[in-house]
Image 1 (cartoon, one colour):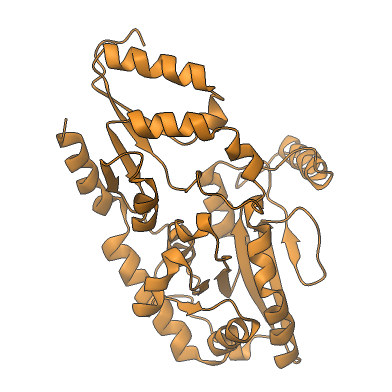
Image 2 (cartoon, rainbow, N blue to C red):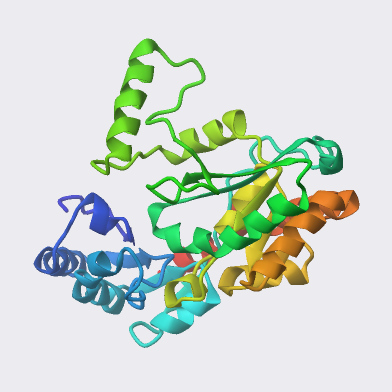
Length: 327
């Protein structure tokens, strides 16, 4: 805090994980910022104050509730990714701006190539990736996956997941992430990944991968035909953003999404298949994407155009400029 040239500081929710600051340290930090007349923007994309008790991170975020409230109340501006999250936090700070999640670019995706004809494929891969906090979400589609397998007994239907759950299931094929992805890994990289994956299976550590490396790995190693984003109807999920939709589209995969919070408008724009959380609706949506080539192609094309027009960084940069101009 010796730099007197700072005008604005942006704090992200990762401050709790990266710096592990306690309440007293946060108060000290804010006091120093006030004395130097440095404005504070706090960026948060999850409703960490209204986590259901059944959520795996409930205990973790309950411990930082007071600290989080101090940050929210004392920030000059709070930025969030969804309207619902803004509504939930307005009682703590009236100056909240919505900045939708965006992508730097659509990776290497061309919507006019690699359109698949799933009717002719013997093996169809359905995919889902997420953090370990989504274990309950993926269980929502267990019965639907069994039913789809039964409906296509002449095909090999596989549900692959990256992250999400630590345990194996008969209806899920787990794909282990490398600890650090390289296009040309060395023997040392292989050894490091082996040890990391082994410790992860024992529950002694979680695999992690820098985001850009993760995307490169997904593009080069994953060949999903359909992607899914099941979400339980919980407090935290209602305020989540549509990031899975953006990522699936950029990876050239049409998606099926729960009719919860961030995904409702996807169905209205025909940029994805949106379903209520019943086995029948999930089953029907997956079967329709497999059988209907035109639906598959149109969904992916619409999604690409939507993301390209509305969810690239160039769209959010104007919002950020207006936020910074307030100071």
